Length: 188
Image 1 (cartoon, helix red, strand yellow):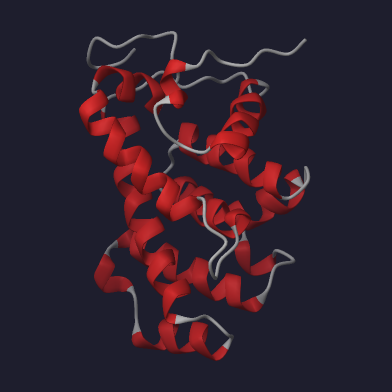
Image 2 (tube, helix red, strand yellow):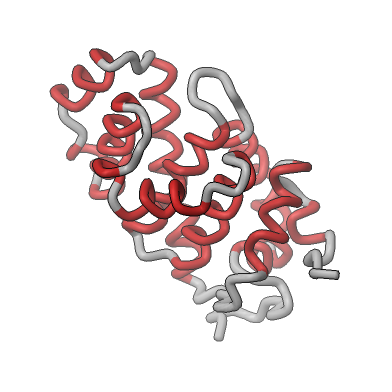
């Protein structure tokens, strides 16, 4: 049960955004800037970083929401997303992405956990300054988003079939006000 009076028909962050549209708007802009770019990192890689950080923060809603979005970008490869989420070192992804996921995991613990060695390792594997910047900012933002969702005890669907439907809507249209103004898609 949410800690504040929100629309319980809207799951997760959507109810919180509907409750506070004036904070939802900049959060939607930030999510689009961080996650809807293929400049350097792909959108799939960005979503997998968000998913991994959400997993480390034990935020069920964000982990499964962003994992489902990554699956959309990866043509349905749920297994890859699961591997990257729970054990990125063993996942069949580039060494560069593994290094960036390690940086993201350090950010999740606290910014000062990121080491010069981690950054140099990522750069040696081809990570640009932009890749590193975006990884750190995605990880930091998802610590905030995760704590927002869980700190207000937002309604978290346990029906896993609801996540892919919303994920496709976000993959198609991005983040923003439509997240809480458009109804949840349904299977037909």
